[in-house]
Length: 275
Image (cartoon, rainbow, N blue to C red; front, side, top):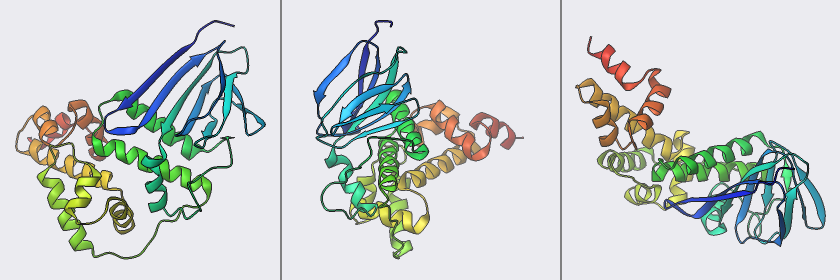
C-alpha cells in the first residue's frame, strides 16, 4: 500500500463552530477518541473501517458517516486502496437551535442511531457544504444557508422533520426584511441582522419565512442581489460594478448565479439589452 497520509483542516470566520477535515490516508490508524462536535463525513475513495459503540462499521465510497457528540470511535483504511474522505465538525451549540426550529422535539440533543448509511440528500448537502468551505468566497448568509440545509437533511433522516405551516402577517415581515436587505445589499449581511430588522428572533424568522414564502432567507437575498445587478446592467454599469454593489464576492460569483436565473452571463444579457 502506498504510504501517504495527508490531513487538512479548513474553517471560516463566518462559521466559528464549524470545521472541515480533508483526509487521505493509507497506513494511519486513529486511536479510540470522541469529539464534542457532531462529526459528519463522506467517504470519497477506498473504505474506512471503524468501531463505534462496540459495533464494526465499513464506509464505502458515497456512504455518509455520522458520529454524535461523545461517540467513541477509531478508524483506519480497510482495503489496499488509499482512503480519502471529508469530515465536518459542527458544535451542538451551532446546529442544535436549527434542529429545534425545524421541528425536532426529542428529549435532549438530536442523536442519530446510524453510523454509516446511504442518504443521497444528506450526501449532497455534505458535498455542498465542503465545497463552500473550500472555496472561501461565500457570503455570511450563504454559509448560514448551507448549514441550515445540512441540518434539515439530518433532521429529515432522523424522521423528525416538521415544517410548520402556521400563518404570519406577510406584509409586516416581508416589508421590514426587504427594506433592510435592499439597503444593505453591498454588505455581507447575516440572517441575525435581517431577523433583527424584522423584529423577530433568528430561528423563528427562518421557520416563518420559509413557511410563508417557500424559500429560505438566503434564497430571497440572492434573488434581490440578482435583480439589483440586472437593473445596474440595464443602465450600463459594468458587470464588475454590478457585482460589488449588489453584494457578490466577485464577477464570477455574479456570473454563476445570474446564469442560473437568466440562462446567460451578465455581459451577454447586457449586450442583448442594449441592442
